[in-house]
Image (cartoon, rainbow over all chains, first blue to last red; front, side):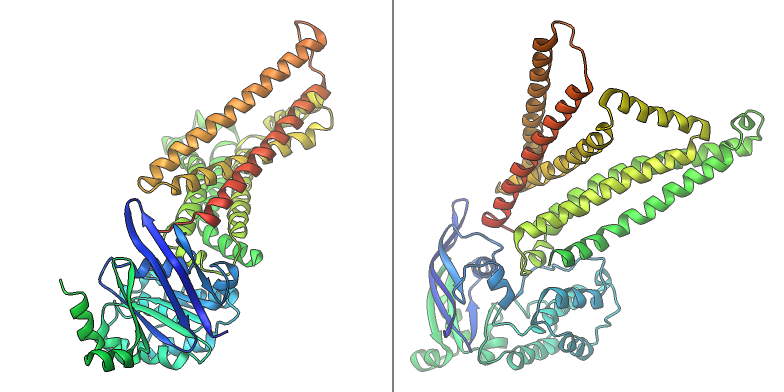
Length: 232
Length: 262
């Protein structure tokens, strides 16, 4: 079982617009995959379907052989593009919450990262700035020993210094058994950590290659290729 | 997992209820001390005392209504915001079956409904002078007279069943509203009116049928025997339970198979 995620003919319509249009994709374990595309290309929709937060119109996703459900939620660690933290808990309480519900969650890792990023575990979630909340969410997600990390715009709202730390964390935290899918349009920052690239364009996967293949075949960086493919 | 969900749901909601319960009891006590040690004292009391009594009673009534509003609002908000709002991203990615989320919300909502009712009653008892409390005792007598000893069980059970149904009905309305692409809240409201109308019609039919049944038994002037009323309560209770189950199943299917957090 080397495939962690497989989707077949995945389609999602909102009214008359198709956010995803027949996406076929296979993601192997041990890879860091960049899901790249301009705004509205279906990145978030894809990730939300994999988490069971959206119901596909047709087609299906299998994660470790299962459709999204309790079995997949145990092994998928998801960073949404939204702030899902409630306002009444302290940072330490939300850590306790994750510890309660996820067997693979390591509070030691979480406290260690909080310390590195200078976040006080006793502060209330509602008093944190937007960027700090994003850091807390990322810490929660990366403190799990999951098999699949689905990170939606993980570095979008944080400062460049924290960005480097976060990317380091992503690379060092995952293991050969796990895969990371991260969506972003900040390609230059993230290119160095990626193994594979998926380009999404108007709900379709238009390119699915390794970073090395892209460099060999096109003789240019992913960032340059992106600018070419999605030229306005 | 359900126990853990319940723990967090209780914590998330208790911070609303505990302070307002405490305040209600406090103002019931203050009003009682000012007023009821001797009800006639007020007429000759200083205007200061009169204002104090008026104020504390005003705050008491305000809190009493406040508890009813908070109970309703928190119930709706904890379902709508924490499952179908942004917090739903957290809740629905937990490795927990959907029905457990539903049972969690429902049990905690029932708890606060019952507690709010109980606290409201306790506060009234604190306010009402002891001799008038005996009137309450005669209410129990009436129950026994009309329903027999069974009434002590059937009335509370019916009360509980109707609370549970009224909560699940709201969940179903919100879940159905969620199926709409736009104006979800408005759609939920419309759905609530729809479900409510259907259930009202069902109950009117039961009453009519019951009346017909009684008339057929004893001629034009129905005589009410405790067993008849208990039968009516039983039938109502069973129908409430069936409607509750239907609503619960519909809500569960929507949240499980048609979830679309946008």
